[in-house]
Amino acid sequence: MKLAPLVLVAAAAALALFAGRAGATNECRGFQVCAPVAGPWVVVPIASTVPRPHVEYQLSCPKGFVVGGLDAELTDRSIDVTFEAILGSPVNPGISTRRDALFTGRVVAGPPRAASFRPHIGCLPAAGGGSRIPTVAHVFPPGHPTVRHVWNVKVQPGVHVVRKACVPGETLVSATHAVGFYGQTPPSAALVGAVHASRGVRDGHVKVTIRAGTAVQSARAVVQVDLTCAGGGT
Image (cartoon, rainbow, N blue to C red; front, side, top):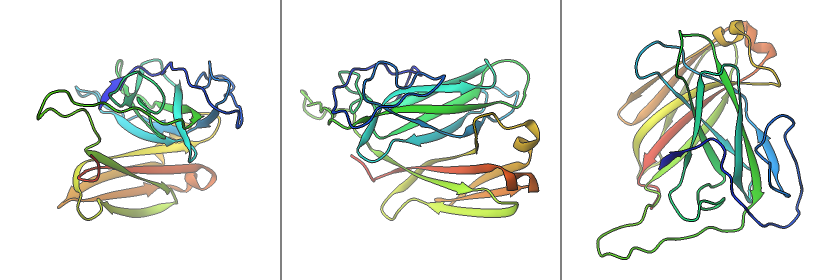
């Protein structure tokens, strides 16, 4: 896996199933057929440590579609947002991307402060991908040795514990969590401060504790739990 620039520029021919465009964002620019999908406002961790902490959030296209373009809205210019691409040639939807896009965000400069970003993806009808054939014995092309399991948990006032693990036969590689707020405008500092999530890992099991105040009753808040597991892909 490899981090790529935020906007993937790629050509794709597809049947005219439906068209769409986001208002102020460019995830569907250049495509005649494109379904825009917007995520929540994802809260970026606040810290002055080096390296700066990051947050990951996965956004998915409808079934039968692949990611063709990406964009994001930022509440602060110092937020750096990238996405994870798949090795292959040519760089194209279905080869460099799949149905899901994993965004990574971090504040890279300045003092610690509340910040968030809203990921956007442009989805194209799937048209297949490509494959690569090794030309040297005992050398393997890039594959998919890991699989991601993602859960979006609706936040309710109070304390709630979420426990997740890889499926039998898989091994936990890493785990992340992200706090997000759905809406057209970024969440206020008070709303961001009303949700706290902490994560622990023990014996391959992930425990995320969510503490939320009453302010979340009027907000569409989610905590995404993301596990990367080995053994489920090739």
